[in-house]
Length: 310
Image 1 (cartoon, rainbow, N blue to C red):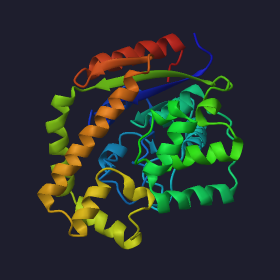
Image 2 (image 1 turned 90 degrees about the vertical axis):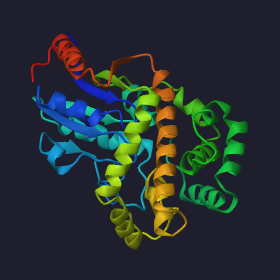
Image 3 (image 1 turned 45 degrees about the vertical axis):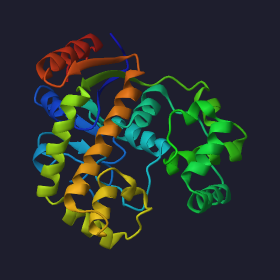
């Protein structure tokens, strides 16, 4: 029997049905759902980022969804701080259930966060200006030289991560990999990681249907309102899949069918990257997307072994 507080994590690629799983758990146990998806934090894009609907949120409390302005970014350290606060605030008779697909967020929370010092503003501003002037691929090329291991986990066009890695190196003289390999204190939580697996070929038509539904439900109008509030396509909230493509439609650069096709293509590619990331994790218990009852029974047995009675 573990003395640490149990926390269940529902993991998987976009469109796999993680929300449905979390609601299934909520019908069996008193649950509080905590988001760990870096796109679903944005308040301007509830439809495009597939945040739980008002009806779904009525089933149980939901936290860390739709609270961040489009102009802001939630880095890994910021997420961990918020998530730990929300878990601590969750009543003892409620089960914290983390739901999402941002692997870096979950890894930092479950494995511990390297104690990276604060970065001076002048260094941060200089690196981010370089990103604007030179482009993210230029920063990525530099990152490959100073931290090839971390470079394998990011992408040439991921301006936020590439800039952050260079900031840390310039400020501390140590690369991200060095910081991530430092010992961190043990977590006060016992994590159960449950993966929802979907074959990419089966997922592709489901993603198309989901995008069609998002458009029907007002994705374009949602993006138009967001553009009126934040007409800066380089703002962090606009960099998400779906947001980028719909913005190009609004600006007249794409037709609707082109927009949906590109949105679907990019979403599928993202789902593939998510699966690649999570397949490297050895402590995830995988279930097929239609094995809800089997998954819930497994979680119930694990909670009993932890001594959690709800």
